[in-house]
Length: 374
Image 1 (cartoon, rainbow, N blue to C red):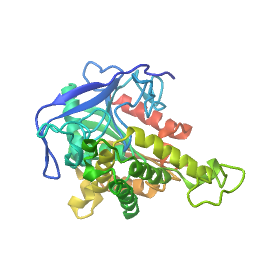
Image 2 (cartoon, rainbow, N blue to C red; image 1 turned 90 degrees about the horizontal axis):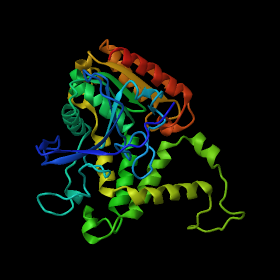
Image 3 (cartoon, rainbow, N blue to C red; image 1 turned 60 degrees about the vertical axis):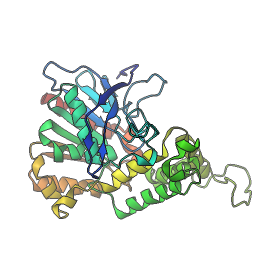
Image 4 (tube, helix red, strand yellow; image 1 turned 180 degrees about the vertical axis):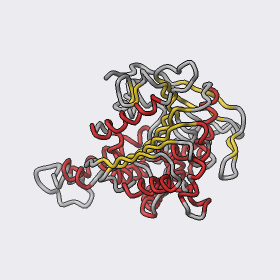
């Protein structure tokens, strides 16, 4: 198995306004994206990869800064999503902070950074901009749309909004909506950011500061939910940083505390606080059954021409297997072609990013099936 090697971001600007589900409008926007592999003659081998909360368009290979793509273990020559067979597109959604138009960039109406004035976006809004990008790349129908976690919600939304524009949907470690507990975790993280004295109502750039303290706490909260109890216990247990207890309410005593502080510090150096607020809200809002009186099967009636793969992980308590099984049942109720794999893995929600041989075996087998339809 190989790597796609050095990759470079591309940018596409859209001058036409985007009407949003909130009632707002994004007057113009630029999308950052990367592509890997070669589009075949009839443009039938394209796979769109949708990113999760803190990821980007840089999905595979090594970028100009030397960073490895966040799903590089899955995508590349000879890998489950084989770039010798497929043309893979990684896209960064508007509202993010990795090159596409977002809160850190200039609002053309004011000439100042968007900040808190950036319009609220939904998963469905992101699908709209992804459709425009795919069209501009000359692709009428995607071989597949793939995503994990929030990216899986986007993949599902493609089948609900544009079922004729894709053949396969691959949704990993995702859910048909967030539970009350998940919304609660997101809200606590948002409050940590908004309560930071450096937040300034979301217009911190104008003040020359960043709400790093709140962002650190938000990341620490989030990171706890991505790991299973078993992984945390195996990696850290109750191990101390020093030989003796300091008997201090403010010192970092345990290795797990040190790890979370490190993750929070690192995150606060590269991620934008307003982006965190926007993306967690998009997670909260996703609920396709809501427009159908809570009937998820009714929501998927229009996706009968699509084929699905759902993957979940046994120790993922943030997006638990039973949530994927809700989607599977809704598809089965509609007699839609669906495959489901529940992988026994100790890693929690982060398992979808890791190199588990059973998980990758399922993905490779399914992409063999996708390739037969190209």
